[in-house]
Structures are given as structure tokens and as C-alpha cells.
Length: 309
Ligand code: SF4
Image 1: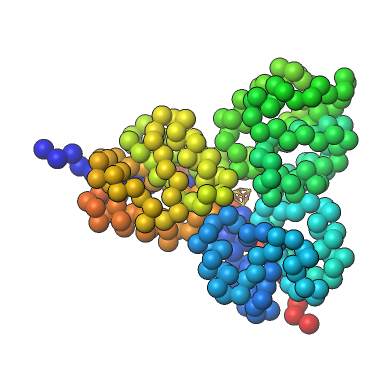
Image 2: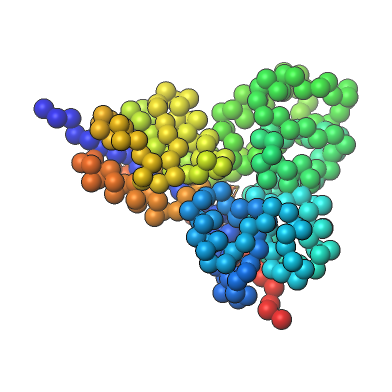
């Protein structure tokens, strides 16, 4: 007898409040000013969204020098350093700051650090660069693993040490790094800065892992939280794939797997999730939604948008 083919859709999955706010804001800015509108770095790390906005007249700049004076410039959801913000203001740009309020909170905590700030995060990620550039500490270190925590240069005795984490990290990995640092510096003070959306999506993927042979995570390769979801699934003992859309589901998985879990990173639009489910339905899978025991009613208000002069 053929085994029934089933898909379990994680709950919650997909877009978070910070990404929704960033995208609603860019739509409002496009309506008000018309193209071109500039964004410093990708507004969120999702290729589908970035390509769509690009076609509608949004230009993504890597440096402020690429943005002409007087233009409308959005800071991305990942935030920027104090120096970049200051430089942008001095270039007479009309700034719309869509930094996620939870990244702003991280900036605020970093700004309050005194002696030493240790930020758990991935070097080179815009959120980490922006947060390091907001640090009020005499010494700021970025630590990306337990090995790096062990190798951290000895800190001045008696230092007050603040520990923070990038908002989109693997919560269990953050716990392991913190434990390692605490062995060396029992006095460190930490604030929980991994965001609600990251935490909830990881919890949902761990719950799926017990009932699926494979988990598909929908998200772009540069999306930190999507990569962490794939890692979380693998650490829970399940084969996992990060895919951008339905076309990237490995044919072998469709053919040889009876139970597939599906989740999506916080910057992945629901249309891509629907596309993946549609392809799996067409291949004979029955889709079951997981029950959501988590309240995700979080919403953020739109940031100030300058008037068109
Ligand atoms: Fe904000 Fe978290 Fe979404 Fe990042 S993943 S935009 S920190 S809510």
C-alpha cells in the first residue's frame, strides 16, 4: 500500500512585522515621490522582493556616494551605524529610516555599553556593522562561534561587560556562546535581543522536525534568519534545504519523500510559500497546517516620511 504523502506547514512562518513595515513604507514612498527612490543596501534580504522593487524604480546603493544629493533614501530594515546616518544627513538626503524597531532596540542597548561590548553575530552582516557602529563601549568585539568566544582576547580585569546578539541568530547557538563567555567572565550582563520572529520560527521548525523526513526553508541565500532555520532543522536531525521558490525543490525529494516540512524566513513573501505548496499538492501531497500556539499580533507603525516639496 502506498504511504500517504503529507506536507506540514510550520506556524508561524514567513514575514515578520519589521519586514512588513519596511515594505509598506517603501510602497508609500514610491507613491509619494515616484521613482527613483534609493535604499542603502537591500531593504530586506529576499531576491524576489528586491528584484520586484528594482523593476519599479527602487535603486539599491551600496554606498552613500551612489545616492545623488537631495534624493529620497531609505535605510534598510537591518539599520545603519551612527556615522553612516550622520553622513547621509550631511549630504542633504531626504531620509526614511525603516530600521526594524527591534534592531533599534539593539542599537540602544549597544549605545548604553560602557567598558566592553561583546556582540554575538556574523561579521559583515549589515545589522552587525550598524550595531558595532552604535556601540558606546571602549572596546567592542564581534563573536561568531563558541571557538571565537574561547579565543577572545583577555579583557581588562574588573571591566563591565555587556553581551548582545544579532536579532536573527540561532537561539540555541547564542545560548552556547553565552555559556562559554560566562565561564570566562561571570560578571557579564546580557540582554535578550534575538527577536520574537526569529525565536518563534525556530521553535516551530524544531517542532516540525519530529514528524518530517525533510524540511524546506523558503528564503534567499543572504537571509540570516532563513539560514538559521535550515541550521535549526539540521541540528534537530532532519535533512533541510534552503530554497528561493518552488522551482528549487529537489525533484528527488518530491519523488522519494513521504513527509515534508515547510517554513519560510521572515523576509519571504507568502506568494512564494503558496507556490511551494502548490507544487507539492500537484505532486500528490496533502498539506496540513500546524497549529499555532504563538501570538504573533506584533505590528510596528510606519516611520516618518518627509513631505514632497
Ligand atoms: Fe525585525 Fe526580527 Fe523581522 Fe529582523 S527578523 S525585521 S529584527 S522582527
